[in-house]
Structure formats: C-alpha cells, structure tokens
Length: 166
Image (cartoon, rainbow, N blue to C red; front, side, top):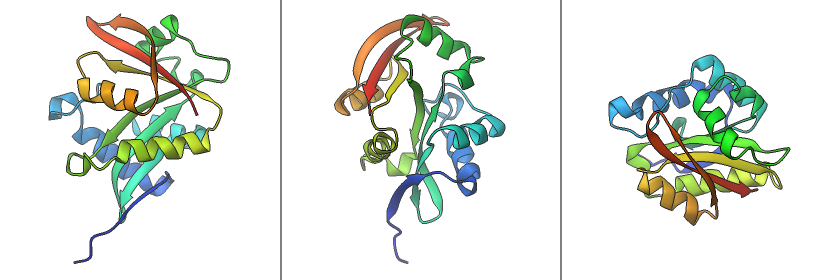
C-alpha cells in the first residue's frame, strides 16, 4: 500500500463530513481538547465566509483550522467574552478551533495549516482564545509567532487571548 502524502488546502463542501467527524472525535468527552461542537450548518457557513483550512491524507481529513467573522460568532458566549477583553482591529477575524487527528500529531500540521491561512488572509489580524490549562496549545501558538494580548475567565475556566497579523 502506498502512503498518501498530506496536502494542506482550503476546504470544500466535500470535506465537510471529514471535518465534522474529526471534530466529534476530539471533544473533551472523547478525551480531546475541543471545548465546543459546531453544527453542520455553522461549519458549512464558515466554509463559505472565510478560509477553512484542511489537512488531507489522500481523501481523509486529518486536520482542520476554522476561521469566522466576529458577526458570525455574535451568538457564541465564550467568543463574546473574549471580544469583551480584546476586540481586535476593525478587520480582525476569529481563528479556531484547530484540530489535528491524534495519529498525525507531531508532524507540524498545525503550523502548516496556519501558514496556509496566513497566506490567504495576509495582512489581517486573527484573534483566538486558549484554555490556560492547555499547555501544548499555548506553546504551539506562541511558537507560531502569536502573542498573548489579554485574558478572561469563562464558566470558571481561565483563558488566554492571542493575536497575530497574517
């Protein structure tokens, strides 16, 4: 069997099921670190609004990096809590979540997806939050050149807010 190389691309409708499967497999109740499950309709809308980046091994989605406008997240309480402490610049967008299949971790896929996003959204500010207890994610995002700009507490959990310019 030939091992498929990984490609990093902007997602298409054909990737939607793979993104949703990977999201479900990485929820906290499944042993992952994603703290929310976005609906199929929300992910489909995000796919058309701003770049949703996927890592594919053959035709299988093994990573994703979502982005959305602030307006699309107006109903998401944790995003509103982040924006209350750091709204970002006028053209800023929300970065995340980002997820890599457990079998593919350690291969710099998060960095590769981020590089693709920065190329597609050059010059725009991205803002994100990370749980303070997620040391791996905090280190990974800092190593990609993101800087901590604020912090907040939501539902008894501490979060750091990071920013970068593409």
